[in-house]
Length: 418
Image (cartoon, rainbow, N blue to C red; front, top):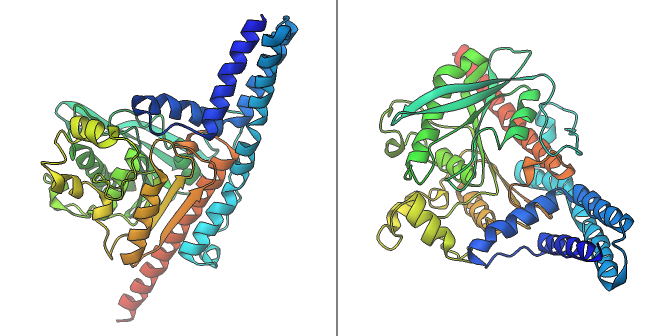
């Protein structure tokens, strides 16, 4: 039993250490390193309970004997204590988000939006729980591509009225995995509980799909929203597109290529403009101009062999066209970009550079929030951190919708007076 406690202590100690210093330059090992760091740093209280419970159980069975047992017990205690900085960092998220919104929207931005109580979640739960007052309509087919049905879910207030603002969510997964049932659930439920109609979509994935087919599907989803969302109480004239990781890339690219016929060949007449974009921990430059990626796997393997199916050296223009960072313009819609400063999968520098380049040219607000201690996919779990960030996303969306309504009212009044 002492050796069992020693082994458990080693495992927990390594996991705790990796959560603070996740490996980024280890090739394929970057994925398990990120996964471990993600689970530990985003569920620190759960990990503390696991460490303490393991130590207590094995000690009661005689594990705390000999040098092996004492070392193992010490490692379990150290692993638990190593979670305290994660807890502290999570509590700073609300201040970081509020400061970012004040910088990007103005210190008086709250005066231009409805007041809401802050979000609350059951932090002891690992899985998000549906918010009260929200219903979900599942598996609506919005397009069929090469025999594959592409489906979406609609999250809507149970007490519906006409013309609710609309949010469209695009899941992540490196363009190769993931679906609408795994990501964006907290964001969609939060917005729907505040009076938004939300749509979460599936799209074709690589290696079967080749970029830009992923983006084609996102544009088709916007088309479906334009034509059908009024049946669910949504306003087809106000759509904010959201996404995480690869979904943030696709969302940003959709927002920056409105009505681009290259990406909507089959329906060039449809207006695919969106009125805002929210991107969690996104990837924005396939060309990696600034050398943010610490290893070659991202472009040489994932992009060239799986997603784009072209060599960068032979098709640099295509990689550039697929990069939101190369599509910034003055008429970009309002953006809210969010990234964790401990992201060990997608470099935080991607969002830093993209937000700065976009803010230089855009005539609309660009908000960038860097979240203390947050890793990739941090907002999937209910936590102090995720609740603070998602509450900020709701405030951002409410702000730009309030501005849209004010502008529309002014236009209507001017039209009536003439």
